[in-house]
Image (cartoon, rainbow, N blue to C red):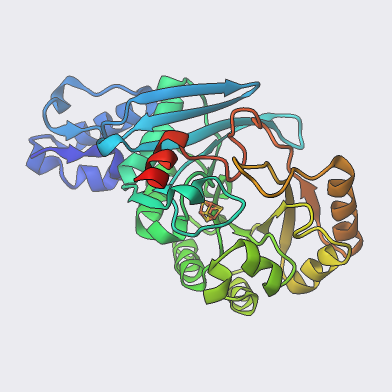
Length: 344
Ligand code: SF4
């Protein structure tokens, strides 16, 4: 018997110790050694498996590093390491992870959408991205954002198991308040996340909603999911997200000139979000290949943010890092795989 160790929490792995001819104490020590030092004890040889996902490509761009890992069948995961200066001046290093290869949601501003959904990642393949960032790239990861390829609620149980592992004290030890799950906002997915966030230890898990529009008409034109689940349903789900002492919901807004930045749009967004504890995160659109839209100008971004603030929204503009490496929001997905899809 051989066990996929990166997909198990410490206690889940220890529960298997007997079948692996290990004492519970040796199993726990080895599990910790693997996550902390990146090495396996000799006693584990032949008994545990690491996911086979060698790093295929590294694309540094300034402080940002995008890397791709190989999976079976010519598929790849993509992840991005993004160092950012926090409000206190301290550097935090976020890892943007993929939960799927490709994505079925079809958002029109997103490069990943052009791949379609190619594969659901398993928990060890999601944690394997952290493992590569920590132990191959030697980065101390402080934050995780589920904002790489894929819609996390479309592979929710694997995502939740990965979060259980990533937050383990003896392992990656990333605080739940530093993990954001970014979703297009399907009600069922938000409900499952809320249920998980009510489990002990996960109350501070952060929910991020990819809103990107002031009303149904605009949202439908860029996010097909809105046809099945219009904004009224999203609002009901957001209302049900447990508030209390929680961190505010992050609302992401990819600003696309001529689509969702008309005067009055930011005020409509504020009206839609009224009464919720939210932070608005404005992300200047980063044109994908063959994009029908350009990037917004600096003054368009400023005008939208000003209107949002005047309408009472706590608004932050996200600095796009890694534009050249195509590593900004919605920019992941290997062009070669896309060509295969187009021609295949
Ligand atoms: S923006 Fe997110 S949900 Fe939409 S297609 Fe891209 S990866 Fe999928």
